[in-house]
Image 1 (cartoon, one colour):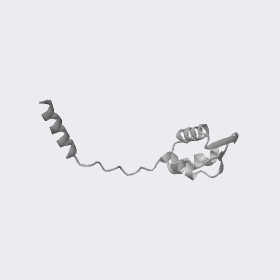
Image 2 (cartoon, rainbow, N blue to C red):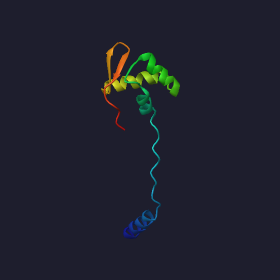
Image 3 (cartoon, rainbow, N blue to C red):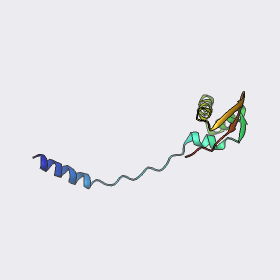
Image 4 (spheres, rainbow, N blue to C red):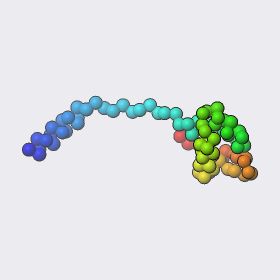
Length: 88
């Protein structure tokens, strides 16, 4: 009985349609990073975030995460510089 059930399950599984990959969604965080100039201030990145519909707190978190992962450097208070381009 188990063999019959295993064969049946294998047959049903083999007849399932193949799953199509989902189209890649644009990543808001990556888009935000790409729009940042090489050197910018807190005011600059908040303006860019506002234009993209990103809340200030979210933009602040993105900048914090970029600095923590060392793709941005924070040399002076409120001044930032891109160190690396974000890898997709």
